Amino acid sequence: MSTPQPAGIGITHNAASNLLGLPPADLERLVNAGHIRRNDKNSYSVPVLVQDYIAHIQSKAQGNETHPKQADVAAHLDISDRTVRELEAKLPVPDDYTLSAFRVAYLRHLREIAAGRSGNGGLDLAGERAALAKVQRERIEMQNAVTRRELAPVILIEQVLAKAGSKVASILDAIPRMIRRRVAALSADDLKLIAEEIARARNIAAAIRIEDLNEDHTDADDDQPIADDPDD
Image: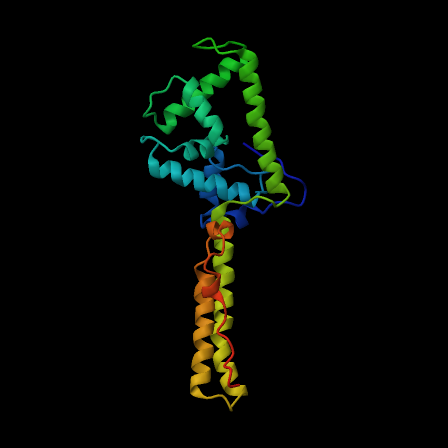
């Protein structure tokens, strides 16, 4: 299944296979099996590519034989968590349903809607069409957010932060040696203090996670630099 994207957005098949660490032939098999979407034969949207591959790995690890989380079902079917909860009440699936059983029930449910039948339980056709329109609207809104670069998979963002943190750490680690060469008047204690402060800043940066961005800085006092010596 292809997801059209605006011109100029996307990476080639070889670049996509390198990003995922897969041989190009294996990536082609995943596309042909419907696990990964692409814009056209030689163009992939990076956020969609990563999202689909993560969903494929999760599905493979679960074996589709254990009861999945609502978030896993939502990612697998490209719908919202709320829609999953609504479908759990409508679809003829047991409480301990598997991912494959839910998918089959969902597809049959969509066929009933497309055929104009209410299905088991006398579901209202107009209401089902409205629900389907809502799902489609939510999907389009997410795709538009990805296109505007307002939305990206968390794992991709964390990889970017990790790489940036690694580069910053190497720069910080070099500062004490540079200061030692250029400022001969500094004592060993001065250099030790500088190194300790740099290490503290580096450790704080390395510990940052996506969820930390929404937290209040209640420990702000702990992050303040050491005050100047009053005798200086």
